[in-house]
Image (cartoon, rainbow, N blue to C red; front, top):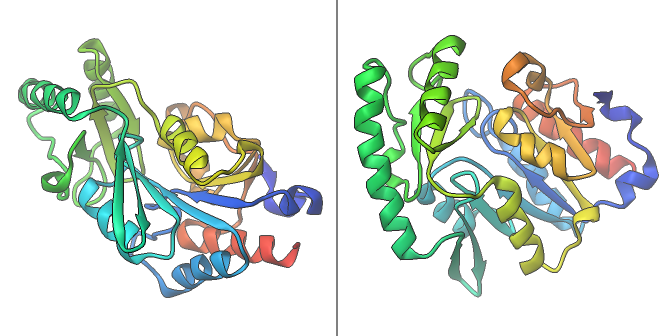
Length: 256
């Protein structure tokens, strides 16, 4: 990974949209900070598009699409995206309602099996507002060791489920979608080209995005995942969490 300062002016000028992860990237451990939010407003004032790409639940994403200064939000690791059109929230999903209901039943059954093998795990506190996936809390309100996380992942894969690790949750779902696949659908909706995108994230569930887009940035905590991280970003900030996000926006604005 290269220091952010090594991004060329030409590459910076090529960016027309910023796709960004939430927890651990835009939102710090302590919560949403005003300096990060104000930078998000600045991004749009400068004529750039802003798209949140997260593992967070449908309930959270409805609020983000409705009230935040963003052009769209991808949620539950690629299950859907929402955007606002003339005060109406438009919701587009990877699978239709029939498939969603089938996957929900499989997830419910799977969670019972998971609990029998890992009795100490807890679902995330926002599970009640999720439509597509199961989120296991690994560091938001409880702590799960890396060793146990790996065991849970292997158990899920053996049962045909997909997994993704964020800095707070282990997400599990049935279905062939990722953050990357749904983000490409958003770009088509917004009439943007993939070559004009910058993605910033912090954790293993951002690997598909780091792998796909040419200009990718990680906040400094991206270095902490070791063997859990499959693909790393091209650039890295000095700051962590929202400080890294603010550092990135300041750099982009200064070079344009």
